[in-house]
Length: 302
Ligand SMILES: Nc1nc2c(c(=O)[nH]1)N[C@@H](CN(C=O)c1ccc(C(=O)N[C@@H](CCC(=O)O)C(=O)O)cc1)CN2
Image (cartoon, rainbow, N blue to C red; front, side, top):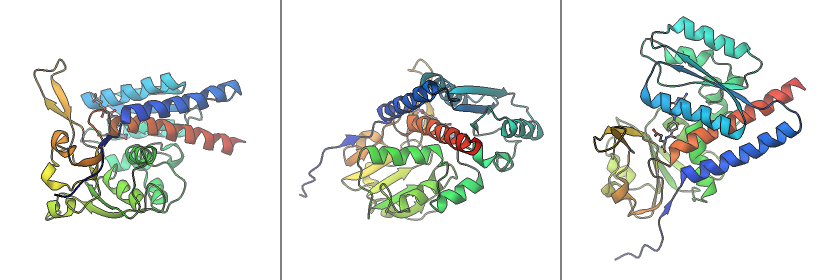
């Protein structure tokens, strides 16, 4: 029998995001003491999707906690694309706002790509504008999408080895999978990984995941990754957060990741939980991007 000599470490996104928020709060305190303008984040929410309401609420509360200004713009489900584009233009032209996000998903009658293209890249703290995506792909300083940025920060703070490792990213979304594959292959630590980007058309996925040192799942399919799909000592980053009906819970659902945590964690060296893993890091890194946006605007104004 092989001797797998390691202990499993849970990558605690809740604690790490709290640490990050405290660090940002200290920066804001110093800004205030110098009499400087503090960062101002705006969030646009169209409709009443329950999960989106939770995430946007959490973004606004986090701003309050660390001393940022925040503005929440709630628009009804029937908002037209033109009305939303007008709102975006107003945010682009408002010098008080350092950065803003349009919460996704948008209602089906609105063209998401058109909306994201309208966001001023200098205020695009989500890092979704093609200009920012291109800069990221070329290793230039830019806003990195919050979820991939949060995963990189978790890997860094827990000293997870990535150099020369085989990373398999499952899911090719513009928000998570695709940027993640770019960041993991870039020079740096974390980084320097050999990356496979798998997706719904990938054949023989199990053969591929069994070769992976690091697996990042961003599928939204509850408990998709099973223990027989991973090798011993693997690092597993679970980005999926699905609300599964559960009458035994007060709120009527439980949160489930893409990973069969119970079984996979027995083979993993590092693993993120759901909840409390990647999700909270997304919010912390959005705040980090807003802090960077303020610094950039200050520099441009001086
Ligand atoms: N404009 C954007 N839209 C969306 C993004 C994004 O980065 N920008 N990402 C996701 C949703 N998201 C942030 O907006 C997000 C998801 C999850 C969490 C989180 O903290 N999850 C908790 C559980 C929270 C709960 O009770 O549901 C956890 O995992 O512990 C924060 C932000 C899609 N849209």
